[in-house]
Image 1 (cartoon, one colour):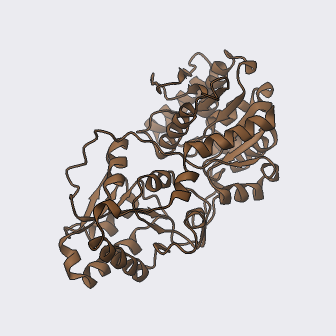
Image 2: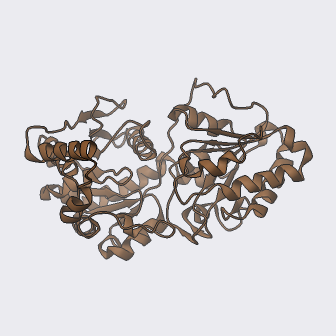
Amino acid sequence: MQNSSKNLLVVTDSINPEDSSGSKANVAFIKSLIGNGYKVCVIHYTQVELQIKGAECVLAKERRANLTYVLGGIQRTVQRNLGVNWSVFLENRFGFSFTFFNDSKSIVKTLERFRITDFDLIISLSKGESFRPHHAILQLPLWHLKWLAYIHDPYPFQNYPKPYTFVPKGAIQKDHFFNKVATHCKFAGFPSRLLADHMAGFYPEFKEKSVVIPHQYDNVISGVSLPSFFKDAAFNIVHTGNLIGGRSPEGLLKGFQLFLESQEEARQESYLYLVGPSSNYRELMSLYKHAPQFIFHPGVSYAESLALQQAASVNLIVEASDTDFSPFLPAKMAHCVMVDKPILALSPKKSEVRRLLGEDYVCQSEADDSEQIAGILSGLYLKWKNTKAESWRLNRTDLQDYFSSAYLNKQIQNILNASA
């Protein structure tokens, strides 16, 4: 293939898609690079030997014969046995835990086995609140001229928009760290245009370096059976993923109830699925658990979650309600677009999800507007009743192109040409 002469080095925390949504997105990203014909070497810190077909995967093993490892172990032992939480003091002093520093150094030691001249581009991928790969590459100045720092969410946490108002331990040092990332990386990748603009507001160095590379679609669902709780041939509204604090499903639950009350026939063939961790809303969801149309499940495997999205009548994207701005691009949006089923987006008025779907897309509402949600569901249900299954589609080829591996390849090629 045309990219077979280009060598890419990817540095990431984990390539286990079962451990977090961030890892799922990163694995899909890596697979898309491979599918585009690049020679890909992956250094990962999963702490278990894993492979991605078509890539050379190298496990960065945890260093143990050093002071930071010992101090990290002492800290965890004291906290566990004596209930003394030193992390606030230590992270406010150093910015990160001893374990973080040891993890970062472990990745550096593995990177030092490679030669920068063997690669055309170095890509660091983040996961959750962890930017260990970015911290590690900062320690290797020779690598900075070929460094694409990919940033999936705002960082540090004090840079999150409302309602996620939280100042983390070591906030000042984390801010200094990310200022260094902005200064020293050659390119900064973001899954969302709004996120790129948002982060450039805190770190102006990102402005001229930003490249928007949306999350990728991972097709691993062939031969996967649907979970037993799924109702075949029904009007199935599906949400898979973590309902973290801030993403309250209250408006959705009330809206679905109003929809059932307004459409008598729908009560016999409509189901709302919330599949994934939702401990923040256990009490709220308990109010609905006895109604058979509400199906709550703590979680399924990665492949099963993708199969559910493909089998759904409508896929849900739920974002925060107590805000008017969301720069996030939910990783699952790529898959929801590619399975070509209608999407009900519960997003703030200014959000990356709405920017992509467009103002004319009718199936979107703010997450707390239960009456509008009910109206959208009624319209979708009546359309579903009168549409043949093979014609029930999202029908957004523009978004399929945007989330395609071909678009990713175009962005990577632009980066490679700019760094040549």
